[in-house]
Image (cartoon, rainbow, N blue to C red; front, side, top):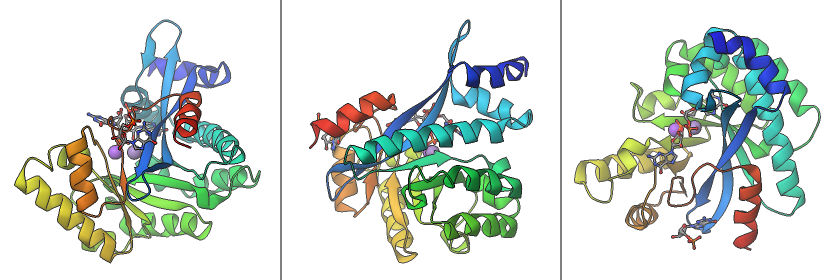
Length: 253
Ligand code: G
Ligand code: G
Ligand code: G
Ligand code: MN
Ligand code: NA
């Protein structure tokens, strides 16, 4: 919590950085999207991971300000990539506490109002925990984002309590299968079945499917044969700074 006293200043001083991890469109064999992942380059503590400071920011009521910074940074970087001619979208992680927060919608509207990128090129990634606490409230707020054109993705799918039939009630566009199921899906039958059936059911619901944690070629080949739409993981790239994304996109032209 001591850290939180420094957060606003850290944002102003440029200590908060946004890195991006690509999502590979499997059928097209190209990077079609990136996920924004925040980092804090602290002057004395070194690089602080989001798992450490995101929960603190949530508790200290700073998560809205931090997320607005991440969205702003992402929109600027994405606008530049789109100007360079790349057909790219970007995803931002939205904490459970913000999904339940109607006032955050107004902050998002202010950011969209600057028209840096079309809302259709943004996706919000939310977790099951965000929607399970108060499903109807979450569905209403997420519907508002969908109405504005923003995509909504269910992150870390499979680790929570929800079922795909429950997910049908949420206005989702995408489902991300958690890496714990993906990593060994080409090596182990139960994980293979879990991934295959999740892809089939998600497609029945009209959702795009992203496999997280793809670390080797065998896994990517399995996902391709299973009809998975996108792959994310160390095989494609670790999370990297915006400049490295430009290089990756340029290399593959
Ligand atoms: O690569 P990595 O260590 O960055 O990510 C760790 C976790 O931090 C992930 O679960 C990711 O969803 C979360 N995370 C990263 N950036 C953000 C952010 O801007 N907002 C929120 N709420 N979570 C984030
Ligand atoms: O929870 P979320 O999926 O939003 O966070 C992504 C986290 O997963 C980050 O910490 C990121 O560094 C990590 N990650 C991304 N790709 C891989 C991968 O292929 N393998 C492993 N082990 N971790 C990954
Ligand atoms: O050729 P290269 O070493 O970049 O590819 C590594 C693996 O990542 C390949 O097997 C390929 O399937 C996958 N890949 C596909 N598209 C991309 C991309 O746009 N960037 C990167 N880094 N890897 C990609
Ligand atoms: Mn995510
Ligand atoms: Na995830």
